[in-house]
Length: 193
Image: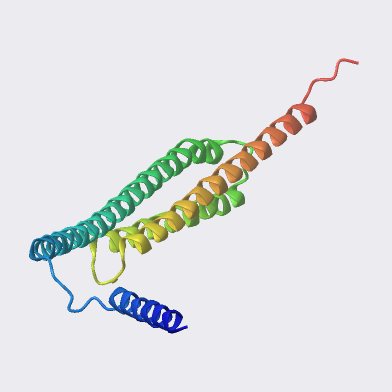
């Protein structure tokens, strides 16, 4: 039994010593070469991050420049379309108004009404052109390029509406002239019976 007690105490002691050395390893040991390489990699990561931030700022600036150019292109397209619409408007007025007013089937009291209707449209067109000129040339109206482009698009739509209105009026007056011409032929035909 003495022998058994000795064996048990020895095994418990061994167990305690083995478990005690397994849990505590003492002071940590630093490897200087790994620490230096870790520091260098951190510095390199910081440099790359700062480069990425600069790249992001550069890309944001380029995006803004592209938006500005895009807005200027929209403005130019709108101004070009406005100019085409106004040229079309004046061509219609020069050609068709002269034909309408010189027609013998338009009565004298209708001449002033017809010319006033066309004059109103022309004056609206000129006012629109003056407004566009102020928007594009004068910085008293503090607007961004996008706001200018939007206003120019609205003016373009209005000019298209004016052209459509002129076309419908000329079509209507031409139909009136054609009707009166036909009516005159019917009323003044020679009867052969």
